[in-house]
Length: 494
Image (cartoon, rainbow, N blue to C red):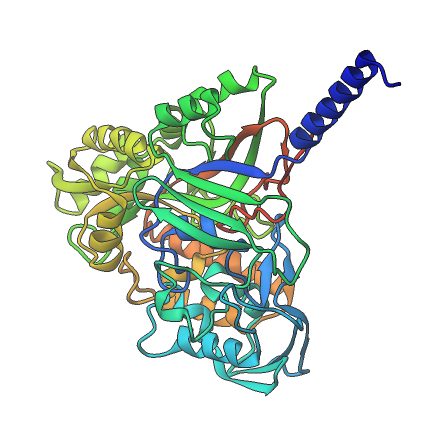
């Protein structure tokens, strides 16, 4: 006969085992990002918030950029390059399907590349595809891409979020209902609040550990801090409140990881508009900027001063901060030489991130000291994209350019800086045709020096990656070599 005591003990043991198992197998995650994306199609928008959600989670490319910045295989399991560097032959993984059940084949790759480089393309990084002369399907799983010129960065370019592969059946509706090949599927977007993904049970690659992921949009620093402390979110991979970092460093419930990004934070300048079309005026602005004061005031000391549009952790980086050292008197003299002895008035449009809003107040105060009176105009993210980025309707703005290795944007005639330099374009053309690493580094250094001397923008600091998340959560990226919250390796520990 089984005693009541034995039965109770067995039941308790079973309950304990089930409870422990459930805890160990936690598969949900709520994390936050600062900005809500305007839509969810990375091939049709410039907002980094799009890639924050979809890159490598929903959408994938032929290649991908790994957490250390290396080019890795993705939908292409392998590739070969012709001796002249003009032909790339990609072998696709077999058995890959899109989230709507359609199969991935070479035709989808051809469609995606042709769509991205078409005359009517809305791809924000259309220049990534400018060297492609043709793309053709050799068979269902083989794609041949022929370039019009050698391009040393081609495989890297194919790893950008803007180069992900989409299907013709769903391409037109990806903004609202993204359909990709990744390990997570889109579930819902509660605009103004959150976006939800779920595990793709039919994923062609290694299964992910998380069953459900919710992205919450929290731009206010105080709200971000409160949400983490209350447990409403378990992670903020790019935490917007540097003033609160110390509070979390002393709390064993959290991991605090200070990493690097590709985010060059700049005082973007409309070079095509007077008086900013005058080099002396731009030089005056450069001399009026006290970078360390901006870092201390806006970022509470987190950030690395920069003198050009390039990440300090990159081996090709040149230290150019002293090209225009902080010198208010020199700034005033340059303004007088330019015909503005009493200064002038201008506008400063600031998007929502704290680095911009806080930094803008400090920049305005510093420029006011030399006679430049700025009217601060706060704008929402959608307004910034429309007015500043698309229409060039601005004088000055503050923004972090988080795209990887994006110095080439200064060679684009239609870019919102409205900067034009034949010398810079020549260097970038040589870089584009060069595969040798040492030569590429030399050309990149030349490019940095040209835009630094031209004071195209006010170069402020490299945005740090302030990551704060639950101490039991593992697999989030420590650094940010590309815009992404890649969740493919994220999991909970006991």
